[in-house]
Amino acid sequence: MVDIISSSQAIELEEKFGAHNYHPLPVVLTKGEGVFLWDVEGKRYYDFLSAYSAVNQGHCHPRIIQSLITQARELTLTSRAFYNDKLGAAEKYVCDTFGYQKALFMNSGAEANETAIKLARKWGYTKKGIPANQAVIVAVKKNFHGRTTTIISASTDPSSQNGFGPFMPGFEIVEYDNVEALEKALANPHVCGLWIEPIQGEAGVYIPAEGYLKAAEKLCRKHNVLLMMDEIQTGIARTGKMLAVDYEDVRPDLLILGKALSGGVLPISLVLADDEVMLVIKPGEHGSTFGGNPLAAAVVIEALQVVKDEKLAEAAFNLGIIFRERVNNLINNTSLIKLVRGKGLLNAIVVNDIPDSETAWTLCAQFAQHGLLAKPTHGNIIRFAPPLVITEEQLHECCDIIDSVVLHFKNP
Image 1 (spheres, rainbow, N blue to C red):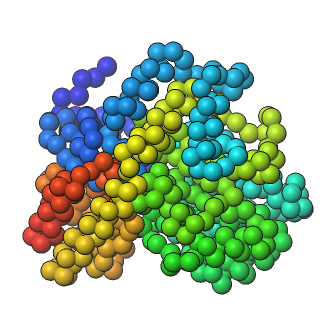
Image 2: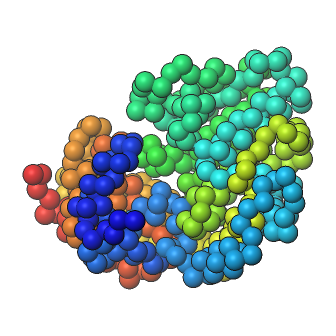
């Protein structure tokens, strides 16, 4: 075991022995608590990424950690070859929480999306009567659902696709936030599912026009198509509601969740659906060695209960308004930032009109120097998503850091 004594040593080890599939900011973190992170030299930072919204409940929430420790001392994994005494209770809890009849636990968000794809296709063949191997899933431009070869087959992001073909057939890609495009695409009798995010987080926090999600739901009902809603990043109180679709009172046929289901302590994802959809998959047709393990089952209940008990959706809603007001005031005093958009505590600022600009990266590096961690997405956009346990006083302190860096920004 190598004892890490400096950031430069840790970075050197990762560069030498790790795959180069990420480009992190040069900050080496060793401890987290609530809204804060510390690097190996002891410097404290505000976390404004929340592990891509996996740490909505804050780093190392004591109740979630205790549930993890307690269960880890008893039983962590049996596989689904046997029953365990925790999974059924967790399935009931999440079904009651989100209003569905069945839950299917997986691990990563990509696995949950893959599960939804399989469910939609199997439903299309067994319930809608689509001819074998001709099912189509409609996806939208600028989507992000994961990195598997099936999922990237529906991507329009060159960095996701370049060099990884051939791609999986069976996807039609249409414009996001375009009801007419949906009407045309869903009229195809071979379409089994519409696969969308209620807010496109990875694309830069793109929010569709009010009514788009409801129109999508109505069109799915009209054309007998399953509405597959990826709430992995937007769910679990991040946008100011338990689910982002709650803003339009939309109920997906397939609800896909992950990230903050565990409060960031281990990978947990799931797909929720009613019996008509979920039970098309029979024993032996889908599964995961770790999916639905008793450790995850214990943690997910506590992680979601923390969200409810601490009223984190309400906090995100109110603090998001304050954050966007602060940034809009900043925009009035600078030409560097063009706009801010978001819901709850999922927000983004657009730095300029040049997608391959280095300005957003440089800004994030300077935020880090002043004790705030954020990360660009797509070159000219910075996503801001602090843990939902942040206080109003802490939020203003972070806005002060953002103001200071932006107003005194000099491109090196």
